[in-house]
Amino acid sequence: MSTKVSMNVNGKPVLADVEPRTLLVQYLREHLGLTGTHVGCDTSQCGCCNVHLNGEAVKSCTLFAIQCEGQDITTIEGLAEEDGTLHPMQQAFWEHHGLQCGFCTPGMVMVACDIARRRPDADEKTIRHELEGNICRCTGYQHIVEAIESGIKAMNAKG
Amino acid sequence: MYEFNYHRPKSLDEASSAAKDAEDRKILAGGMTLIPSMKLRLAAPSDLIDLADVDGLKGITVGSDTVTIGAMTRHYDVQTSADVQKAIPALAALAGGIGDPSVRHRGTIGGSVAHSDPAADYPAAVLGLDATVKTDNREIAADDFFTGLFETALEEAEIITAIEFKIPDAAAYIKFPQPASGFALVGAFVAKFGGDVRVAITGAKDCVFRVTEMEQALASNFSPDAIADIQIGDDDLLADIHCAADYRAHLVTVMAKRAVAQAAG
Image 1 (cartoon, chains in turn purple, brown):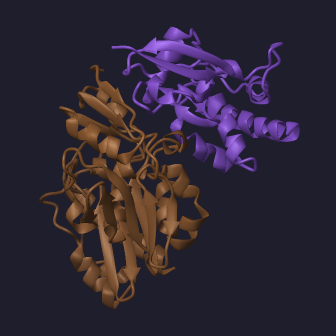
Image 2 (cartoon, one colour):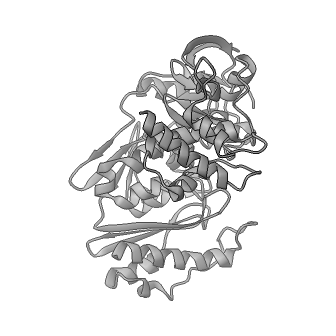
Image 3 (spheres, one colour):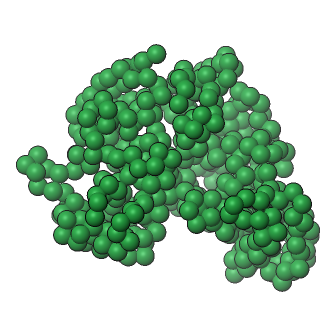
């Protein structure tokens, strides 16, 4: 049995009929076509599906869409500006080669922005610890950590 | 995942009624364990009662002797609470070591305690700090609460509303995490209340338990040396691909010693 759910996704109100068992990530990808949010493991471990729920990073594979009634969701598609100018954290990943295959990148960037919000003074050690819930199988994390350090500085400078 | 009926009650009374009326209900708090379990079809409730909109289940209250944490209070909120950090720093640190940041943004203390995962962190604090589990119809002492593997004293439709922790003179929680999951292979919560000491161990048996022999030794001499020679038997200890029973038994003593050293320091 489906039920109505409404929320704001990337600043736009959306309304849909979903089954209660529809996960947020399924809703984003399959109903709204926002396929930037990835499903890497489906068991809450890899972090590829991270989005922001009311500004905080959460794993959208471990959340029902119906739980997000009336809430604000931001996905990776919602970070860049309308004219295509990248968000400072995306720009930092670009400049520091913070990705190889790119599969984990949306989750990494969303969590990186969350680290910047909570820990604007985060050093390398803190960033590595904060990435506990994000798995990358390509890079060895070195460039990701460098990108996040740089991205946090850029976000701080932008204010 | 199987289908289910979703309920979003606005009050505790409504939640209790919905839980009682359902054929096979689960209470949805943060969902950090329940939702993965449902995806794996390990759990297949007919009805989910989501507590998200129920008033009065969130928040932290510090009294003269106790810290009371609402059941829907998230790990992140306990971790970053200045009040908890001041009153029971070991509890704030424990909350900050659960899962990862995104999980701590959703996971709740009530959900963790109700689930009684054998490797969960919070049960060690509940038992170690002689807490009281408050529900929608009674209060349950920690010593009576955890009864087995994913089993507690909760009735089928009973809902945890808050956990009341006693404030210790000193306490510490040390765990040996399984590197991939972060769950405790063994975790030790040690708390000192005047001349009494409580030692609660998680990760080693079907559910959290106390080690009275260590508690007695620490009551007269609160130092790691006092328990260095106390080894628990490994007959009923968990054994799995990550850790054999005798190794878990060894870790119990090592983690307890480290917790005492940190609490005493």
